[in-house]
Length: 168
Image (cartoon, rainbow, N blue to C red):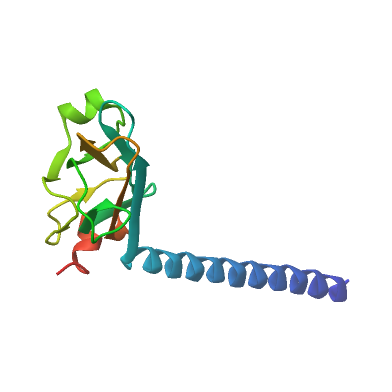
């Protein structure tokens, strides 16, 4: 009888050791992922649209994923060719809404009265949460003309205390 008890007890102990090793590896993987999530990433922003025959051109330029935030660093706006002047005034919004009425009401953070134009932003000057997107509205565009926005953001974890240690 004693041989059976030793064998059964050994199997239970090996099973417990295997589970502990698996749990420890999963915890290490979660910690590595958490650390990777905290490292801010450079991300490219882009949007484009073709001006309608009447009215303003409105288009989206993207936004951060759930649990992330974007710190805007640069935006450039104009036509397809940066050496050519484009008609209109560009207005930029950080908003959850995309229709013209909502964009006029809130979220406006910058404009460019001559196109093309490049705007630079200091750290934490414009921060978007996961529910917001960058929108561009071209007022008085040339009908049928193509307009482009490109830029860069720092994509970071939304927890500002964690992100602050990486932000200058």
